[in-house]
Image (cartoon, rainbow, N blue to C red; front, side, top):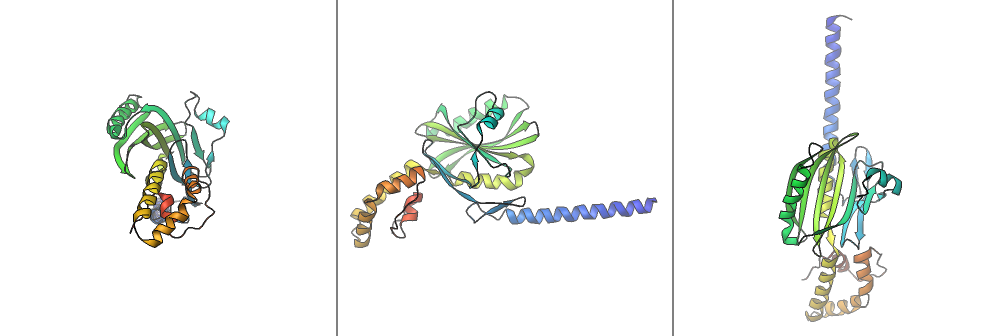
Length: 267
Protein backbone atom coordinates (compact mmCIF):
# COMPACT_ATOMS: atom_id res chain seq x y z
CA UNK A 1 0.00 0.00 0.00
CA UNK A 2 1.43 3.34 -1.07
CA UNK A 3 1.46 6.61 0.82
CA UNK A 4 -1.63 7.86 -1.07
CA UNK A 5 -3.59 4.72 -0.19
CA UNK A 6 -2.66 5.07 3.50
CA UNK A 7 -3.75 8.70 3.40
CA UNK A 8 -7.12 7.75 1.89
CA UNK A 9 -7.64 4.99 4.48
CA UNK A 10 -6.82 7.42 7.32
CA UNK A 11 -9.34 9.93 5.93
CA UNK A 12 -12.03 7.23 5.71
CA UNK A 13 -11.37 6.12 9.30
CA UNK A 14 -11.50 9.73 10.51
CA UNK A 15 -14.79 10.29 8.64
CA UNK A 16 -16.28 7.08 10.09
CA UNK A 17 -15.21 8.07 13.62
CA UNK A 18 -16.73 11.52 13.17
CA UNK A 19 -20.00 9.95 12.00
CA UNK A 20 -20.10 7.67 15.07
CA UNK A 21 -19.43 10.62 17.37
CA UNK A 22 -22.22 12.62 15.72
CA UNK A 23 -24.67 9.73 16.15
CA UNK A 24 -23.64 9.28 19.79
CA UNK A 25 -24.05 13.03 20.34
CA UNK A 26 -27.58 12.96 18.88
CA UNK A 27 -28.49 9.94 21.03
CA UNK A 28 -27.21 11.68 24.17
CA UNK A 29 -29.07 14.87 23.22
CA UNK A 30 -32.32 12.88 22.94
CA UNK A 31 -31.69 11.06 26.24
CA UNK A 32 -31.06 14.34 28.09
CA UNK A 33 -34.64 15.36 27.26
CA UNK A 34 -35.98 12.34 29.14
CA UNK A 35 -37.20 12.52 32.74
CA UNK A 36 -37.32 9.96 35.55
CA UNK A 37 -41.06 10.77 35.72
CA UNK A 38 -41.51 9.51 32.14
CA UNK A 39 -42.48 5.91 31.45
CA UNK A 40 -38.75 5.18 31.18
CA UNK A 41 -35.38 6.77 30.48
CA UNK A 42 -32.44 5.37 28.51
CA UNK A 43 -28.82 5.03 29.56
CA UNK A 44 -26.71 3.54 26.80
CA UNK A 45 -29.35 1.30 25.21
CA UNK A 46 -31.01 0.16 28.44
CA UNK A 47 -34.52 1.20 29.44
CA UNK A 48 -34.81 2.25 33.09
CA UNK A 49 -38.12 2.79 34.90
CA UNK A 50 -38.29 4.77 38.13
CA UNK A 51 -40.70 4.65 41.07
CA UNK A 52 -40.82 6.09 44.56
CA UNK A 53 -39.26 4.23 47.51
CA UNK A 54 -40.04 5.22 51.09
CA UNK A 55 -37.53 4.93 53.96
CA UNK A 56 -39.52 5.46 57.13
CA UNK A 57 -36.44 5.17 59.36
CA UNK A 58 -34.73 7.97 57.40
CA UNK A 59 -37.83 10.15 57.14
CA UNK A 60 -37.70 10.48 53.34
CA UNK A 61 -38.87 8.97 50.09
CA UNK A 62 -37.05 9.21 46.76
CA UNK A 63 -37.41 8.08 43.15
CA UNK A 64 -34.99 5.34 42.05
CA UNK A 65 -34.89 2.61 39.39
CA UNK A 66 -37.53 -0.06 39.92
CA UNK A 67 -34.94 -2.80 39.39
CA UNK A 68 -32.66 -1.55 42.18
CA UNK A 69 -32.15 -4.15 44.90
CA UNK A 70 -30.12 -4.07 48.13
CA UNK A 71 -26.50 -5.04 47.51
CA UNK A 72 -25.72 -8.58 48.66
CA UNK A 73 -24.08 -8.77 52.10
CA UNK A 74 -20.88 -10.41 50.80
CA UNK A 75 -20.47 -7.86 48.01
CA UNK A 76 -21.21 -5.01 50.41
CA UNK A 77 -18.51 -6.21 52.80
CA UNK A 78 -16.02 -6.37 49.92
CA UNK A 79 -16.95 -2.84 48.80
CA UNK A 80 -16.63 -1.48 52.34
CA UNK A 81 -13.82 -3.49 54.00
CA UNK A 82 -13.49 -0.97 56.85
CA UNK A 83 -17.01 -1.87 58.01
CA UNK A 84 -18.21 1.67 57.29
CA UNK A 85 -20.91 0.67 54.83
CA UNK A 86 -24.04 2.83 54.55
CA UNK A 87 -27.24 1.17 55.76
CA UNK A 88 -28.73 1.12 52.26
CA UNK A 89 -26.77 0.33 49.07
CA UNK A 90 -29.01 -0.17 46.04
CA UNK A 91 -27.75 -1.60 42.76
CA UNK A 92 -28.70 -3.15 39.46
CA UNK A 93 -25.48 -4.44 37.94
CA UNK A 94 -26.79 -3.70 34.43
CA UNK A 95 -27.22 -0.01 35.29
CA UNK A 96 -24.05 2.11 35.56
CA UNK A 97 -24.91 3.91 38.81
CA UNK A 98 -25.73 3.14 42.43
CA UNK A 99 -27.32 4.98 45.34
CA UNK A 100 -26.45 4.76 49.02
CA UNK A 101 -28.48 6.15 51.92
CA UNK A 102 -27.53 6.39 55.58
CA UNK A 103 -28.44 8.15 58.82
CA UNK A 104 -25.22 9.51 60.32
CA UNK A 105 -24.28 10.51 63.86
CA UNK A 106 -23.80 14.16 62.85
CA UNK A 107 -26.12 16.53 64.74
CA UNK A 108 -26.75 19.49 62.43
CA UNK A 109 -29.82 21.77 62.32
CA UNK A 110 -31.32 22.71 58.96
CA UNK A 111 -29.90 26.25 59.21
CA UNK A 112 -26.40 24.86 59.83
CA UNK A 113 -26.16 23.03 56.50
CA UNK A 114 -23.89 25.56 54.79
CA UNK A 115 -21.26 25.32 57.54
CA UNK A 116 -21.55 21.53 57.54
CA UNK A 117 -20.81 21.53 53.79
CA UNK A 118 -17.71 23.68 54.34
CA UNK A 119 -16.42 21.26 56.99
CA UNK A 120 -17.27 18.17 54.88
CA UNK A 121 -15.49 19.50 51.80
CA UNK A 122 -12.34 20.26 53.81
CA UNK A 123 -12.33 16.73 55.26
CA UNK A 124 -12.56 15.27 51.74
CA UNK A 125 -9.85 17.57 50.39
CA UNK A 126 -7.54 16.49 53.22
CA UNK A 127 -7.74 12.89 52.00
CA UNK A 128 -5.16 13.71 49.35
CA UNK A 129 -5.16 12.91 45.61
CA UNK A 130 -7.66 10.04 45.95
CA UNK A 131 -10.56 12.50 46.21
CA UNK A 132 -11.20 15.92 44.72
CA UNK A 133 -14.13 18.23 45.49
CA UNK A 134 -15.54 19.49 42.18
CA UNK A 135 -18.26 21.65 43.69
CA UNK A 136 -20.42 22.26 46.74
CA UNK A 137 -23.51 24.19 47.63
CA UNK A 138 -26.83 24.28 49.46
CA UNK A 139 -30.17 24.17 47.63
CA UNK A 140 -33.76 24.32 48.85
CA UNK A 141 -35.84 21.19 48.24
CA UNK A 142 -39.39 21.14 49.64
CA UNK A 143 -38.50 23.92 52.12
CA UNK A 144 -35.46 22.02 53.44
CA UNK A 145 -31.79 22.92 53.03
CA UNK A 146 -30.00 20.16 51.14
CA UNK A 147 -26.21 20.25 51.06
CA UNK A 148 -24.64 18.91 47.87
CA UNK A 149 -21.06 17.87 47.22
CA UNK A 150 -19.76 16.69 43.85
CA UNK A 151 -16.62 14.66 44.35
CA UNK A 152 -14.29 12.81 41.98
CA UNK A 153 -12.72 9.70 43.49
CA UNK A 154 -10.32 7.09 42.20
CA UNK A 155 -11.21 3.41 41.99
CA UNK A 156 -9.32 0.36 40.77
CA UNK A 157 -11.26 0.32 37.50
CA UNK A 158 -11.31 4.09 36.87
CA UNK A 159 -12.51 7.44 38.17
CA UNK A 160 -15.89 7.74 39.90
CA UNK A 161 -18.20 10.76 40.03
CA UNK A 162 -20.09 11.13 43.32
CA UNK A 163 -23.14 13.34 43.82
CA UNK A 164 -23.53 13.46 47.61
CA UNK A 165 -26.53 15.03 49.33
CA UNK A 166 -27.04 15.80 53.01
CA UNK A 167 -30.34 16.53 54.74
CA UNK A 168 -31.11 17.43 58.35
CA UNK A 169 -33.98 15.23 59.57
CA UNK A 170 -34.94 16.02 63.17
CA UNK A 171 -31.54 17.63 63.63
CA UNK A 172 -29.57 14.60 62.39
CA UNK A 173 -27.83 14.27 59.02
CA UNK A 174 -29.20 11.79 56.50
CA UNK A 175 -26.63 11.32 53.75
CA UNK A 176 -27.05 9.97 50.23
CA UNK A 177 -24.62 9.35 47.40
CA UNK A 178 -25.46 8.72 43.75
CA UNK A 179 -22.25 7.60 42.09
CA UNK A 180 -21.23 6.41 38.64
CA UNK A 181 -18.16 6.05 36.37
CA UNK A 182 -16.76 9.44 35.32
CA UNK A 183 -17.40 8.89 31.56
CA UNK A 184 -21.15 8.92 32.32
CA UNK A 185 -21.16 12.41 33.86
CA UNK A 186 -22.97 14.13 30.98
CA UNK A 187 -25.78 11.57 31.00
CA UNK A 188 -26.15 10.75 34.68
CA UNK A 189 -25.54 14.10 36.39
CA UNK A 190 -29.01 15.22 35.26
CA UNK A 191 -30.52 11.93 36.47
CA UNK A 192 -28.88 12.43 39.88
CA UNK A 193 -30.28 15.97 40.08
CA UNK A 194 -33.81 14.76 39.30
CA UNK A 195 -33.52 12.01 41.90
CA UNK A 196 -32.54 14.57 44.55
CA UNK A 197 -35.36 16.90 43.48
CA UNK A 198 -37.79 13.98 43.91
CA UNK A 199 -37.10 13.71 47.65
CA UNK A 200 -40.21 14.03 49.80
CA UNK A 201 -40.20 14.41 53.59
CA UNK A 202 -42.54 12.17 55.54
CA UNK A 203 -43.19 14.62 58.39
CA UNK A 204 -43.98 17.39 55.88
CA UNK A 205 -46.59 15.17 54.22
CA UNK A 206 -48.20 14.34 57.57
CA UNK A 207 -48.33 18.00 58.57
CA UNK A 208 -49.77 18.94 55.18
CA UNK A 209 -52.47 16.28 55.57
CA UNK A 210 -53.46 17.64 58.99
CA UNK A 211 -53.47 21.18 57.61
CA UNK A 212 -55.79 20.12 54.80
CA UNK A 213 -58.19 18.44 57.24
CA UNK A 214 -58.32 21.62 59.32
CA UNK A 215 -58.86 23.81 56.26
CA UNK A 216 -61.54 21.57 54.73
CA UNK A 217 -63.37 21.28 58.04
CA UNK A 218 -63.72 25.06 58.36
CA UNK A 219 -63.92 26.16 54.71
CA UNK A 220 -67.77 26.22 54.62
CA UNK A 221 -67.72 24.60 51.18
CA UNK A 222 -70.15 21.67 51.59
CA UNK A 223 -68.37 19.39 49.08
CA UNK A 224 -65.00 19.77 50.86
CA UNK A 225 -66.51 19.45 54.34
CA UNK A 226 -68.08 16.15 53.28
CA UNK A 227 -64.90 15.01 51.49
CA UNK A 228 -62.72 15.52 54.58
CA UNK A 229 -65.15 13.44 56.64
CA UNK A 230 -64.82 10.54 54.18
CA UNK A 231 -61.05 10.84 53.96
CA UNK A 232 -60.56 11.17 57.72
CA UNK A 233 -62.16 7.76 58.25
CA UNK A 234 -59.19 6.29 56.36
CA UNK A 235 -56.52 8.62 57.74
CA UNK A 236 -54.36 5.75 59.05
CA UNK A 237 -54.33 4.08 55.62
CA UNK A 238 -53.17 7.35 54.09
CA UNK A 239 -50.46 7.75 56.75
CA UNK A 240 -49.31 4.18 56.07
CA UNK A 241 -49.05 5.05 52.38
CA UNK A 242 -47.01 8.15 53.17
CA UNK A 243 -44.71 6.47 55.68
CA UNK A 244 -44.35 2.91 54.43
CA UNK A 245 -45.32 3.07 50.77
CA UNK A 246 -48.29 0.72 51.34
CA UNK A 247 -50.93 0.84 48.58
CA UNK A 248 -54.18 2.72 49.04
CA UNK A 249 -57.25 0.55 48.48
CA UNK A 250 -59.83 3.33 48.50
CA UNK A 251 -60.89 5.87 45.91
CA UNK A 252 -61.46 9.25 47.52
CA UNK A 253 -61.60 11.41 44.42
CA UNK A 254 -59.25 13.75 42.60
CA UNK A 255 -57.83 15.39 45.75
CA UNK A 256 -55.95 12.30 46.95
CA UNK A 257 -52.88 12.35 44.65
CA UNK A 258 -52.07 15.82 45.99
CA UNK A 259 -52.59 14.66 49.58
CA UNK A 260 -50.20 11.73 49.24
CA UNK A 261 -47.42 13.81 47.72
CA UNK A 262 -47.79 16.40 50.46
CA UNK A 263 -48.69 19.06 47.89
CA UNK A 264 -52.22 19.81 48.98
CA UNK A 265 -54.07 22.15 46.65
CA UNK A 266 -56.56 24.48 48.25
CA UNK A 267 -58.97 26.50 46.07
